[in-house]
Amino acid sequence: MNVSNLLTNYEEAIAMILFGIGFSNLLLQKNLIKKIIGLNIMDTAMYLFLALKGYIAGRKAPIVTNGVQSVEAYINPIPSGLVLTGIVVSVSVTALMLSLTIRLYRRYHTLDLDEISVRLKKEGL
Picture 1: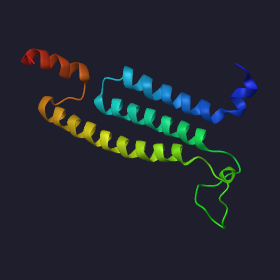
Picture 2: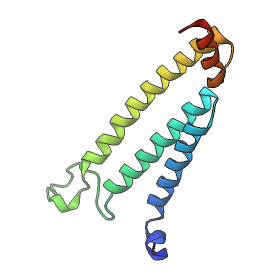
Picture 3: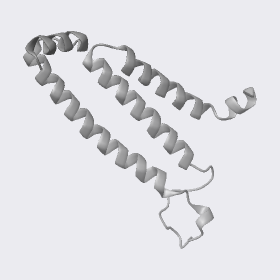
Picture 4: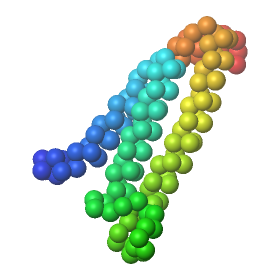
């Protein structure tokens, strides 16, 4: 890998590092809250990456002002729309995961996924 490419695209590198941190957190943690945090870090990294790919230096948001209708004057609005939609979905999924985590804690009095799995096997589920 060329170091100059890494330095010019450091934002993308940061997004990928964040994704890796979130993914490793999701895989390695046993606590359900920490897994949810890892998933949120992954989501945030993807939103950062999409926003960076949709941004073009020197262009403005796609709102027609002063009669300028040239396509070259504005950024592509689709990545921004995807990011906004993703944030809404992410908040909903996080709320659902947290509510299920609360239910699991009330039933098993632990957030350790291995302990919950052992108790489920004892119950025969």
